[in-house]
Amino acid sequence: GAVVSQHPSWVICKSGTSVKIECRSLDFQATTMFWYRQFPKQSLMLMATSNEGSKATYEQGVEKDKFLINHASLTLSTLTVTSAHPEDSSFYICSARDYRLAEINEQFFGPGTRLTVL
Amino acid sequence: GNSVTQMEGPVTLSEEAFLTINCTYTATGYPSLFWYVQYPGEGLQLLLKATKADDKGSNKGFEATYRKETTSFHLEKGSVQVSDSAVYFCAFPSGNTPLVFGKGTRLSVIA
Image 1 (cartoon, rainbow over the protein chains, first blue to last red):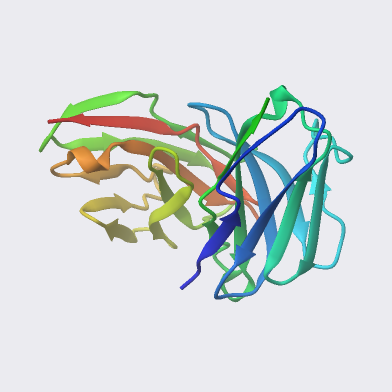
Image 2 (tube, rainbow over the protein chains, first blue to last red; image 1 turned 90 degrees about the vertical axis):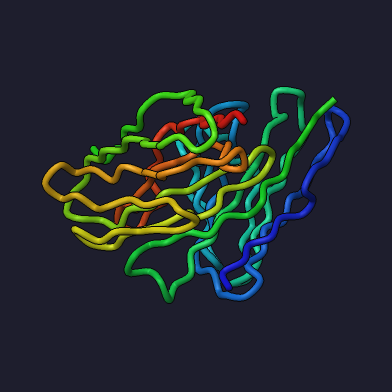
């Protein structure tokens, strides 16, 4: 149980285009999903917290107009990188929290999406 | 503030060697503690967890004991394998917020 999927697993796009990444909780309801960015050989950097049915909360320094997050249901959150540029190339990872485990706050991670912007 | 300090890597070991990756935390109260593992090119997987003091989490030969008195959660394995090569993250939740992560420790096991 507690499986999180991401789609696509990798994507290559041209500079100036937009890319949408999906994060799904397959066998549980996720009231909260998190989006992280990871640069090579570095730890995860939290970008935003996404609560179902409400606006995402972005971390300081993350452009909300560039990284659009939607969490329309208890099993799906999307991250759209708008007008992508080469510096947006990175590994994007989502995680989801199962409200039933809220007391220990465990998060389940997706496999990640590697974005390369040419 | 809340933080996690992990030993810096990379750590390189020969197969069957003993592994210790140190982790200490600074937190309010006594949160659950986690170790996550990230294999090359993949996302994070929960390796083990402990929810209260003196609990021992274990999985795949790895162990970590929640030490309240030293605010530590060191990861150990008695005999590492090449397949254990990965990055290991110590983490804990901070209230109703995302996990607080350490910087990660890269482990390379050579045959």
